[in-house]
Image (cartoon, rainbow, N blue to C red; front, side, top):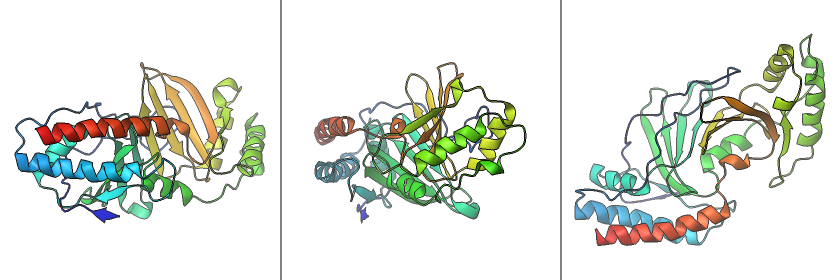
Length: 287
């Protein structure tokens, strides 16, 4: 990871956990307001030049990278002056996807936020007290810290015999998960188990929750509603739930996939962001 000769100072308060519904899963990232890129008002020419330098280097690296490929552009922003950082933050805005990657045993935690440019991310690592340790700007389909956390999860150990008494359809679901997780390959389309369509009793829900456990990743993707994604303790199995604009659960699923598509930046969006970043660079230089 390369360093810019300018830092990032954390801007704004850390996202507050959003209230979760149904099962007691890891707290979701806060639903911070979407922020459209705006001209940095009153910014000094030196701050605009520093922000433009960051965008220029990012653009050069993005042009050589394809989403999902190796060596995604990733820059440490550890020394940026407050004025330059404010200009950069205003210029990049804030997008629809945010994530929290929990550290084990009270260790450091990562907070990830997509910018208003799809496939361009900010990732901030904090210690147990919330103090910043790292601040990173990167580009790609999925932020590196999220991919790494997902890849470190243990292989699924799915045994229907461990389900509690009183279950009805949970054993069949566990067998379906076990069958597909053994055959899942990186890049393959997800196999989706739609829990909303299945007649499940409370013991089924409790048994699946206990068997799959809670992983270190929580992702919030916003559009017309909210898509809340939680990793389980089994690599390649995700809880993906969709809520409407009234925050009512409308679809509850388990996905067997390396990473859910609903939180991944697509190649077309990535290419569109490159074009928009070129416009942003001209804008910063003319300011």
